[in-house]
Length: 289
Length: 289
Image (cartoon, helix red, strand yellow):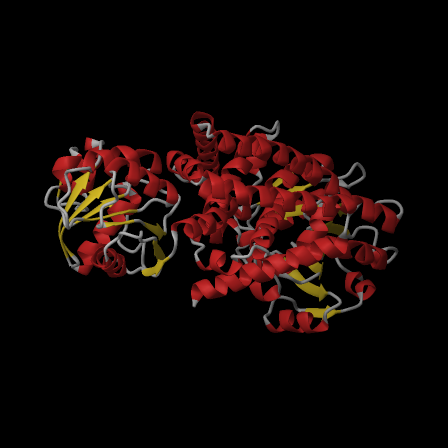
C-alpha cells in the first residue's frame, strides 16, 4: 500500500497504473504532474488522479513513490528538477522502454544514484496514447521488468515490485544491458520496421491504391506504426546501440531471404516460412497459457 | 444465382465462399474437389459442400461456375486436369493472390484461354487455414479484385462479380500487372517481412527470452507469420518480379532509416515516424468508413 504516489507524465502508462492501483486499493492519494495543464485537468476529471501540479519539486514533496512515465527524451529534465528535492526514503521508478539511457541520465542528474531508485519497464501498451486511452487492466497478466542497480535498496525494489503486482502484472528482474538487447529485438526493431514499411508505401506512386486494397493482415502488421512517434523516436535513439545491432542482423537475414526469392528456391523458402510459423505459433500458445 | 458451383480446394477461402453463397441463397448445389479425401469428408460433415469427388474432370462436369482455390503452386495441375473437360459456357475463376502467374499457367494448360475464364482475388483471409476455419462472413465488406482478360466474355465477368457480391464483397476490376504490383506492396511484402523477422529472432541466442518478453505489439506485427507457409511461399515465388521490386525499394529505405538512427538524427527520425503514423491512421479511418 502506497500512501502517496506521484506520477510524472499522466498518459497511457501513468494513467493506467493510477487506475489499477486505485481499483486494487493499493494507494492512498495520487498526485499527477506534467508540463501540460490541460492534460492534468482531463486526468483529474476522469478520476485518474486526485490532484495535480505542474511543478515537479512540489509534486515529489512528501511522495512515498514517484513514477516517471514521460517519453525518454523528457527524462533528464524531470530528474534534474527532482534532484535535491526528494526525501531519503522516497522510492523512484520509471517506465522507460530502454534502461541504460535512463540510468545514465539519472546518474548525470542526481550525481550519486539514490538508493530508492529502481528502473522499471512495463511491457504493455497499445497504439493509443494519452490519459484518455488509459484503463485499469492494461498491466493485467503482462510482464514488468525491473533492472535494480547495485545501490538500489532491497526495500525500494520490493515496494516497486508490489506496486506492479497490485496492478496485476508479473514482475521479473534483469540486468540493464540484457534488458536493452532483448527489448531491441522484440519491441524496438518491430516498431522501426512498421514505421519504415508504412513510410515506404506512402511515398510510392500507387500509394493511394496500395492503402485502398490493404486488408486485415496489413492492418495488424502496421498497428504499431500508429504509436506515438515522439515516444518511439526517443526509444530508438535511447537504445541506439542494441537496436543497430539487431537491425544489422535483420538486414543481413533479409538479404539472404531476398536471394531465396530471386533464385526461386522453393524448398529453402518454404522451410524458412514453416520454421517461422512454428515459432510464432509456439509463442502464441505460451502467451495464452 | 449459380445452379451448380464446383470448388476445387475447399479450405479457408473456398469453404467461406460456399458458406456465404449458401446463406445468401445464391447457389443451388456445391461440389467440392481436392486431392485430400479427409478434408472433403470434413467439409461435407460441416455442411460446407453438398457432395465431393477427388476427380477433377468429374467435378467440373455440369458445373456452371468453377472456383479454383488451391495454393498457386497447385494451379497448373488443376488447370491441366480441367482442360478439354469444360462445357463452352462454364465460367472459371480462381482466388490466387498473384494474377500474372495464374494467367500464364492457364494459357499453358488450356492452350487458348477460355472465354469463360475470369481471374480473381478476394482480399480477405485470416492467419488460420483449412475448411475448419472457414466462415460465411469472411468476404463481407471486403474487396475482391477481378482482372478480366481480353477474351473474357462479358457474361462470365458479370457472373463472377455477382457471385462475390452475393458473398458480401465489393468488386473492383484491375489490369493483371497492376494488381500484382499493388498486392506485392500491400500484402506479399509484409508477409515476407513478418516471416523474416520471426526467423531472425528465432535464430538469436536469446530467442527464448525474446519471445517470453514480447508483448501485444509483437503479437499483432507477426500475426501474418502464422499464415500457411506453403500458400505464401507459392505467392512470393509466383509474384517474384513485383515482390523483388518493392523489396529492393524497402531495403534502400531501411538503409536510410538505419542511417538516421546511427547519426542520432532526432528531427528526421521523428518526422518519418510522424508521417508514417498519420498515413496509417488515415488508412484505418478509410477502412472503417
